[in-house]
Every structure is written in structure tokens, then in C-alpha cells.
Length: 295
Ligand code: GLU
Ligand code: ZN
Image (cartoon, rainbow, N blue to C red; front, side, top):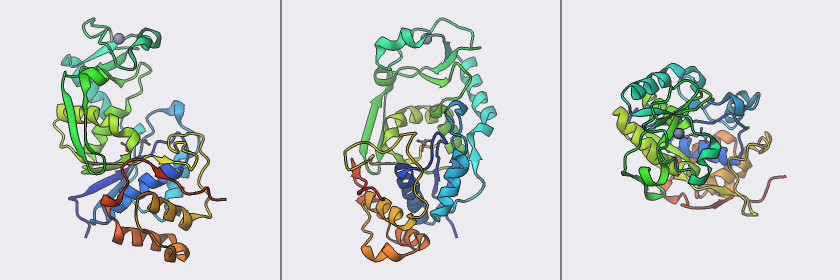
């Protein structure tokens, strides 16, 4: 029996193929869920068609299946969820919590990414303007299972942030919070590149009265030359014939003590070993080195 007291998910963006960093994130969220008999859901974060690579959705899902991952329930696509996002944007806009911003990139370039509130009280028309949510002068903090205590002052460090872009596309921060709650997600396991998004998400959860999930942010995976291997949208797809070695590399990048006796195991056997032995306390906090490139 699977216990709904744990619901995890993997939420890839189809702006590129599955690469080693995303395999590590998929594996960690999968093992964390399955090791406690939890559910593991799949959500395609296809919010931005302008950054989508043709064929990437199918390629990501196919690669995951090829590695032996099985998800529960139907695949959710964010491109099908616009009504849910729009409803919240409208509600906040009509309550004055969100407002239209017409600032150009040029006008904001001196503010280091922290929006200075220029349009806060100007009452711009929301059509063809970005919509920003007002943030309070408060610190949002949470205890990450690997990274420890993390906090950010939303007013000082972020400023009012975009929830719907000028071109009408919904922001990741908004969609992720709405969908995680809608899917009942209790545990979020993802890359540390999203650590500094989490306080914004906590704030939106609070506004919406949603429960706060537990968080585990994984270390960034770096290549042996020290370069980050992560959001490189040009990363080549992972080789299809190296499933077991890549899963073992991913397990070791997660600090799990996968021994050489697994070298001849099938991908399913490696995943089952991972489920039985998963220990989140072994996950390194900062950088994790991807071993030498596979030929
Ligand atoms: N779609 C995001 C990504 O591919 C992950 C979002 C999340 O896990 O919250 O980086
Ligand atoms: Zn503005």
C-alpha cells in the first residue's frame, strides 16, 4: 500500500533534454518518495512555449521510463492549467494585492533584480503589462532537510515579483505553488538552484492558505572541471546505453554508498537497491562532483 502521507513529484521543464543534473533530481525525489511508500507524481512545467525545445517533453518522459522510473497517476501539464493560474491572478489583482507594472528592462537595470516598486501605486491597466505581487517587509524562513535553515527578506532581497508576464505567460513561482498544492505534494526534492525561490513560494502559499511542504534542496552537480552541470539547455541527451553506470553515478553524487557489485545489475535492480538504502542524511550539502565523463 502506498501512503498518501508522502506525495513527491518530479517537475521537469521541457527547455532541454534530461541531463545528468535532472537525472539526479529525478532519482532523489523518486527514492525519497518510494523509500517511505509514498506517491511520486510527474508534472511537465511547459509554461513557456518560447523556450520549449521541440520533442523535449516526449524525450524526457521516454528517458525516465528507459531508466526504470514509474510515476503514479496521470502526467500533469502546466500548459493545461492556465485557468487555475488566471483565477488567482484576477483575485489578487481585484484585491489590490497584485498590480500592473509597465517598467521596461532598461528602467530596472540599475536595481540588481530587486524591483523597487515603481508602479506600485500607479493603477496601470493590466492588459499587456506584467502583473506583480506586493511583498511584505518580512523575512521568510524554512528548515531545509539538507541545506538547513534558509531565510530571505522579501522586501529587501526580492521586491514585488512577477506572477504573470507582460506577454501573458504565467510565472514559475505562481504555477509551482498552485500545482504543488493542487496535487497534494507534501515533499519537494529539487536542485539547490531553486533554494532562493523558496521564500517567494512560502509567501504565496501563505496568501493562498496552502500547507507548507517539506523541502530538500540537492547540491549542484559540477563537472570535474568545476563547471556547473545543470541548467545548460544545450546539454546533450544522456546516452541511452549507459543506464546502469549513469544511475550509479547519480546515486554516488547523492552520497549513497552504491558499491561496485551493482555494476552488472539492471536499472530496476539499481533503483530497488536505492529505495532500500536511501539515506537523505548522506546527501552532500554543497557541490557534488559528477565523475569522469562517460565515453
Ligand atoms: N521545472 C523546474 C526545473 O526544471 C523545477 C521546479 C521545481 O522542482 O520546483 O528546474
Ligand atoms: Zn513597474
